[in-house]
Structures are given as C-alpha cells and as structure tokens.
Amino acid sequence: MAPYDLILDCTDSPATRYLISDAAVLAGKPLISASALRMDGQLLVLNHPPTPPLNQRRAGTSYGGPCYRCVFPKPPPADAVLSCGEGGILGPVVGVMGVLMALEAVKLLTGAGSAAVEAFRGHISPSMDLPVGQARDHSMLIFSATSSPPFRSIRLKGKRAGCIACSPTATVTAEALASGTLDHVAFCGLRNPIQVLGEANRVNPERIKVLINEANAERGSNGQMKQKDYVLLDVRDEAQFGLCALDGSINVPWAVLDGLKEQSPISSGQTCSSELKCQRNDPLSDLRKEAADHKDIYTICRFGNDSQLAVEKLQKLGFDTGSRRVQDVRGGFKAWKQKVDPDWPEY
Image (tube, rainbow, N blue to C red; front, side, top):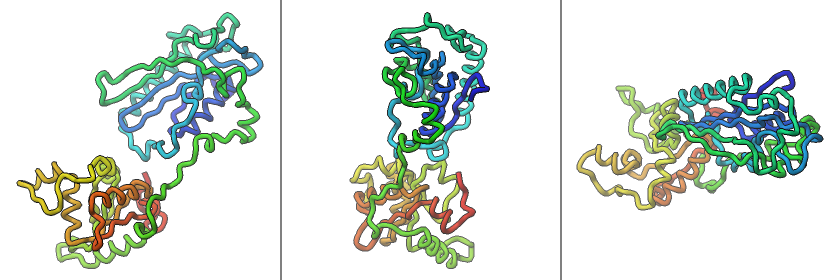
C-alpha cells in the first residue's frame, strides 16, 4: 500500500474488509469501503484523516477518522453472511456504489469538501487533535433501490476508545499481519454446513441422478418426461432457479416456504374456483399437485443448508407421511457439480 495515496475496498468478505482496514491504518492511508448486495449498498470513508503511527498516538485524543473496527467491532455471525454470488445483486446497484466510491476518491485526492487536506497529505499537526468522543463528522451512506428517497445517512460516533487497530493501545501491528498470527478468518468465524437432519432424511446427489436417468429413459413420443414417481423441489430463489435447474424440478424459494404457517392455506383435499386463484392463495399448489399419490419429495438448494430447513418445514406442514418421505439432497448443487455433473454452472 505504501506507493498509493488512497485505498478502495470493493470486496464482499468480512475477513478481507477487516484485513484491508487494519493494513490501511498501519500504512496511514485513507480507505473508501463500499458494499452492495441484492438491491442495497453502503459506503464508508474510513481512516480519514489517517491515523498516525502507534508511537505518535496519545491517550485522550482522537487522531483522524474511525477504522472499520471502530464501526463494526464485532463481525456478523458467519452463517448470516451472504456473498454477492450467494445472495444475488442487481447490476445498477453495483454501478451506483462504484460511482459513489469514485466521487469520494476524487474528493479526497483533491481535498474538495475536506477540512483535513493537510492531514490527508501527511502533515498531521497536534492542533488537529480532538478529545475522544468529539470526533469530526463521520457518516455511513446507505442506498436502497426500493426506498424513497433511496439515500440516507447515518452519523457515526467516530473513533472507538480502545480500538485494537487505531487507538493508542492498539494491538494490531505490522508484525502480526506479516507473521499471520492475526487470523482474520478465525476472527470472523467459519461458515460450516448445518446439520439438522438425520441420515434417514438425506440422500446423496448420485441418487437423484439415478432417478432423473430412469425418468428420461421413459420419455414419451413427444420427448417429454412421463409421470415421475418422485418430486424434486428446488428451494433456491427464483433468479437462481432461472439460471439453471434440473429437468423436471419445481421451484418454491425457501424464503416463501419459511413464511408459511404450519397450517397451510389450502389442504390437499380442498379445491379452488380457478387454478390461478389456487396458485395465488397457496404457494405450494404446484407441489401438492406434483406430490399426489404419495410421491417422495427431495429438496435441493445451492449448498445443502436451506434444503434441510425445507425438509423440516414440509414435515411440519404434513407432507412427510408414512407412505411419503421428504428428504434433502446432501450438499446441494455444490455436491452435484463435484460428484455428478462437472459442467453444472458455477455462479
């Protein structure tokens, strides 16, 4: 980072964000950090003015702007973190956040709108010291494409007393970063696959491949699959299902399934005045139709987590009966690609 005047962080991993922020503080460089997911984004200007070296920081004063650890002293739970690839993202949202980052970069490099141009250029003066708790005005810009207005600003408290990265008592050092003793991945936690089902409620992806092959072997003269003796329920969101899906599968996103009450709107024995009305009132109408005659149901998702939760939900909704099993596909499409179809799209 030494040859550069400014750092822009466009990553989508908490561990990487903490690492870049720590490195920016140690290098004395301002950091512009932006993130985007689905239809939302946020923007932060951090370590501006830059924090001086540890031996020049004095207790009771606050040098420059907060770092990423000041704003987020604790990382989010690992299982709650979604990358752009997992959660999806709208292209124009990335464009908005990228343009905002570029604008802030130009402002910092030229000093436009900055009250600390000299500090940014490296001329940090004792006259710029502020008591802790009286930091300059720092804020987080929040963007939401679905809100009106789409922008709002949240004022930040400034530097956090006792911050392990930028306070006078900081323990994050260049030596710790270089040696690897400061493990940012361990700090943020590892996201492990969940295990909520017993073996009796799980099948390997190879089993699904066998079922699909058997159904394909019995195609009718029109090339369409004949009546299957199983139901393959894809619980990814609609966008992911639209990208790629297994032949004959139906889609009910986990978010929709999770929102259903245990007593679902329409039981299998009830009828509607029209098919459209049934679908509108009961998101599981297609599933009920496909799962008639006590067909086994197999749930699948991207990594094999939501599919397990979907099995539990369907059990509560009464789909798992003595003559019909509900099972998840272990490892989801990640395992499908590894064990069955190496050409399966990776997104």
